[in-house]
Length: 62
Length: 238
Image 1: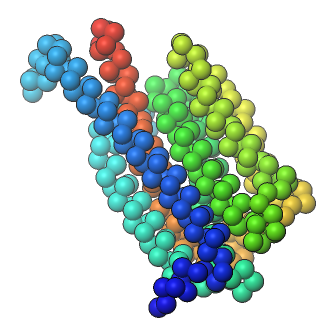
Image 2 (image 1 turned 180 degrees about the vertical axis):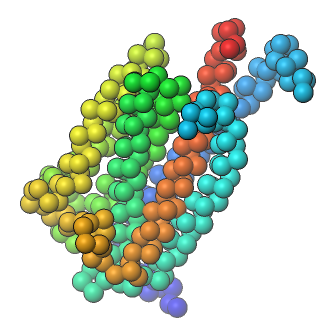
Image 3 (image 1 turned 180 degrees about the horizontal axis):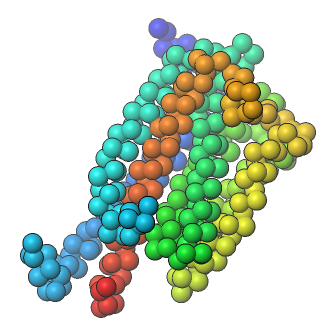
């Protein structure tokens, strides 16, 4: 297969590729944001619960 | 259903489901991209520009579907005060807004070469733009009050009222004159487009759907942990 032809998209490259790029950008952006805030709250919660003696006792219980 | 409906159950269940949904999303989008870019033939009228469809149409489907779910969650939250319903609705909103944005931008990039214009104020395009603003309004309202429960209620009411826009989007292409083509997949009498075009479309849509499910669960988990963190900070753990 000819990659140059592929990327040229029959002359529509400047419409097709930006459409795919925007989709990738938006979806990956949402993914990074959601994972980032999940990790952050997980970390913060871990630190808090470490400090809280009541929680520590609860965590040791079977 | 009520069994999965409490936050503890949800945390357990979603911990199991997230990796599977993520894998399905990666698989669906990967296969969808391959089929859309390499397998599907160019259109006899539109040439290669038709490949924009494989991003545009699944994004449009998800934009409406996610709104429907968000409104449903809001309604359940308002009526039954279910603890997870508002959390689900608020977790879904930015995802729906993202799909709507993809739909609008890819549609614009498709409109310029095919219709000769980036944008027209016709019924379909305008109603989808309204959908985008409904999402933004929901997000803004949900975060607009110091008292979080007031924001949640206000946003939920907006979401429920905004449901009126969904049938308008769906039938806009039949009710009004528009540049946008009528439905060719979900219509009475079956799809009017060839299976070789339908498969990449469905593959991509399935990938998007699992992508949404994955992020929805991650965002709901975040919100639940956030609530626990707040409770710990202010010294009133449940």
